[in-house]
Length: 259
Figure 1 (cartoon, rainbow, N blue to C red):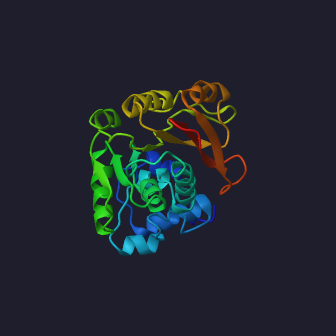
Figure 2: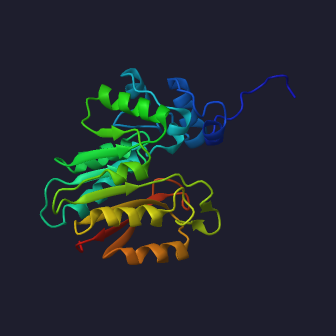
């Protein structure tokens, strides 16, 4: 050894499980995570702002949010694809765009950006994440309603206008649902995807419903086969933003109409 000590790698596990998990990150932390995990100091772009820009405006996030948030490049593509399908729905009152696991609210931001006139609603159970996200959205003067509730409590209080389109982005914690060989098992997310979809179907009733589920490049085929029959139409779209085998996408399914 040459006597020179190095700081431990500032990777995603440190932010997800280490002392930085529930800490509010400073700009250096955010940029270091981007460099050491992805080779890009501007990796954590949110709300259409680079880290130095959103940090300079007073936006703050926790360590785990830096890892778990859907960054701009991906959220923009997700929002565009969801909007394209949603706009093919039967003419309805302004759509309700819902994120039951809001986190940073960045995906909800991009969905609403591509669906002007829609109403945005998010549920975030964690009080620390809720407080920061509410503050961030207020700083940016974004008219997105966020409620500090778990998804079941939030959905149980949901009311829809007659024929109103319900658009739901579904991205619960994956936990141990992702297996390197078999891919993402939609039955093992927390909570299971089918449980969330079934609740949404019951709430939507006869109203048109579009579910967009965040997925991984490799999906467990049995879990996907169990989910697909719940929809009138479905399609998977992947986004080649990372190395092959490490990409994210969405599985979209509609009820009440076929795009």
